Length: 224
Ligand SMILES: Cc1cc2nc3c(=O)[nH]c(=O)nc-3n(C[C@H](O)[C@H](O)[C@H](O)COP(=O)(O)O)c2cc1C
Image (cartoon, rainbow, N blue to C red; front, side, top):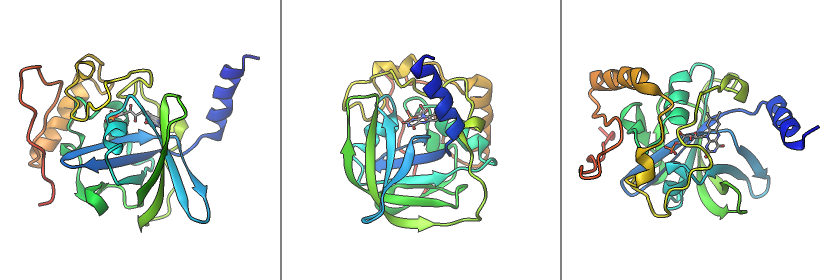
């Protein structure tokens, strides 16, 4: 049997849980759905998440002192689509959901009461398409104990970025050429729906890629 194909089945049977990882560096905020995550040390306690080099969240995390991990439940489909199906390179995700700044300004998603903030201790790039970020928990909140959203439930046509994409290093603002060409898995109808919902809630929203000569939007401050 083909090892890669059967390994995909092996991983599918493990059916890992899904989380949203967020990070902030200066005025930049980013977050994405992550399936690659686990505790990786007991003493001292360490937790690891693997971020795709294609993702804005990876680029922002390189400059972040903390990352936050948010537990998703079956009720969080909308957040899952926003953070897993769109990229911060094209969508102001934090104008489309409620959040508040946690340690180091790391965005904490209001809809996810079970979450932990890690202080980044090390990063490990083994040359593959994801980079491991290892951190120590500095802040933990526990909501109701409910089953997590799992990989099997986390079907999307496309992630916001294919893992094979490679923007230039240092492209922290998402203005790079590559950000304008990747189709957005969320689709126009769904994006409009979210845009209207966000506008109704009084948030500023930027949808779609910016044109080359357009000014970047002002950062949205949700600390009100
Ligand atoms: C089920 C599922 C699991 C995913 N797992 C990871 C992961 O472990 N690490 C990662 O960096 N991206 C993962 N992604 C992809 C990102 O969530 C996705 O590309 C996101 O849109 C990137 O957003 P960003 O460019 O704003 O960071 C996953 C997506 C899905 C749908």
